[in-house]
Image (tube, rainbow, N blue to C red):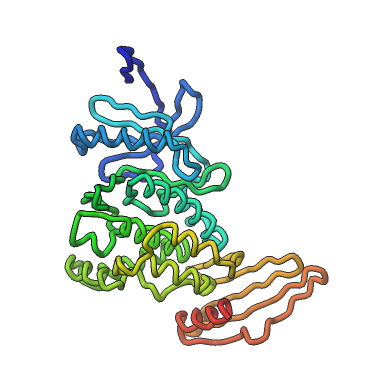
Length: 358
């Protein structure tokens, strides 16, 4: 229901299905708007979790972001409320989030850089406007119909005060910055850290990230203080682990963004954007993995040839090999120096890393 200049207007939406993204106080659905006759994303926030002032602030942020009309920030169609809930509607995009793309197939370095430059551009914009996002993760980076990434979900966003701080006690657990365990005051460095974690997951995949988090928790016997200590020492995520084809420059950028010491991170999102823009290595390797068969493969499809690098486990050994297909003749040849045997996957990855980053 809307009340505007004494006019009450009723809005009806038909929920089609939940699309996940349920947070501490919200649910997200695809809904059909019969008035506009189109599919929208409907975010439903319970008022029980928000006092009156926070409800007002949420609408204010939505209005500012909508009026900005930034190409890499999710536009908001309208906001409304009833007795129990606040409703925010946004366009629905078939491709879903970067997380959705990652679950379908690993991203190439070119895709990682493109989508990262997109969502970081949106993040830079809200920083200029004096706001922090504070909930950066692959599920909150949407890919629109033009294959460009846009930043969404500002439910935890807060304005910076005159001292450069924003108070926010709620955060996505696995993306909390090391310093957030000591204070609820957030700074630009919290967003920089979360951006770094998002890029890390885009490079290595969610499975690697989640397994590392499981090891962190179980390895410290579920003891909160030990887990926090490990995070604050920079032991999670594993800054030394990257898939072999990820360029060294990109690794360095990500590791600096998520440094456990905020003073050693990038001072602004613009610095990250400038650094990412200079990467021109290993852009188009297509990586796939078959966990059941313990197999990894990388394919580089060029105009005149196609190169395939393989890594697989046989008994207790990890073996690498590489083939080059010449398209004109259809002839396949072995690439010398790539046939090697290793005692474990880590050693094999190090060998391949040297060949990708020679």
